[in-house]
Length: 204
Image (cartoon, rainbow, N blue to C red; front, side, top):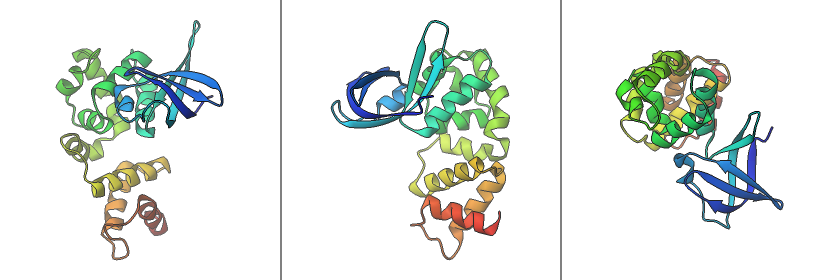
């Protein structure tokens, strides 16, 4: 399994890149959300990847962030009828935060406006992913979809996701991080790591 590419960016197009890794050129398909974050050709780049094996081809998909790759995997593995091409279209048409907010809030209209996603597909996405996104934080996710996250909110979001990766339920993780961020020992300059450690120490 190829989990990431780290090398010189040779070619960058809105839908694909070529990265030179120690003299070997790797082509990877990317969403527009990742294209916007790429450096200039000739500079060093690191892309997280997902290898999809078909009978007729091995296709590498690249992502600028773990959140993008995680959403790609979630769509392909958890929603019937959605393959890698549609998953890339979704990532190209909506931010990860806005997508989570739309699913949590049951916003069929927002999802159906994405290229390649009709009303029925949007409804299926919501039905099949709502439990995985988590209804407990629907209001928080929906609000995040309507505005850019502030630096403090982004830290809270990242800390919650980190705790969830460690097995916490979403609502418990969210409450624990909010409590930790308000504690006397952690001010506005607290890092995501500090917030997570504080939550783990409290056994939340």
